[in-house]
Image (tube, rainbow, N blue to C red; front, side, top):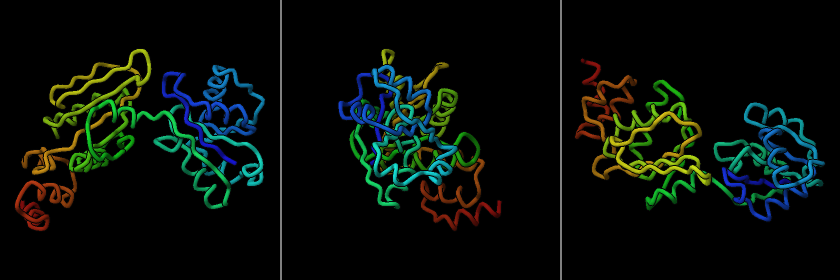
Length: 262
């Protein structure tokens, strides 16, 4: 049987008795990084007399292709990512899909998760969508962020310390009045919360990933961009026409034809 085990995202006390028991009894440990997992087991005084197999985003397919199905059925196997819940912006989903396809019994232990922790801490209420990490740059990033901002639900993102300032500047440009909640070092000693309108937020140089929770926009105006701001965006005409149609009384087709003429 395969057990998917969440690990602490900071505070080492954030692990359940059930998760510890699964790690103690494991014969095979699939892990995102064997070094990180072995260090974690040492901290909990769990013996390392197990088989450790590295399974991360770059080798998942290869490892799964060579798995011994009988081992997964007859031995106590666990999967852990470096921190948090496997399968949420972390590897793990492909191994679950393999278990489903091959009728291998598996279970998922609930536990620490940065996105849900930040959502609760934000104080926002209502439906939410989780988007993980944005593309790093280019049109793909801009298009993704604009789609998130026109979403009528609360949005949750992850962002790296290297790009958090960039994201805040983008939010200032595209949605300056939108209320944003940011969380860093969740569950740790230096846990940090910031909540304000995008236009008022400034992020200093920092280490560690951030969770960004974006409140839903005004129902009467999904995008908080002015017409001319959208015109100046470096986007394909069809995409630009769709965005402009959302804040005007014209159809995307009408706007597209106008843009072609200009």
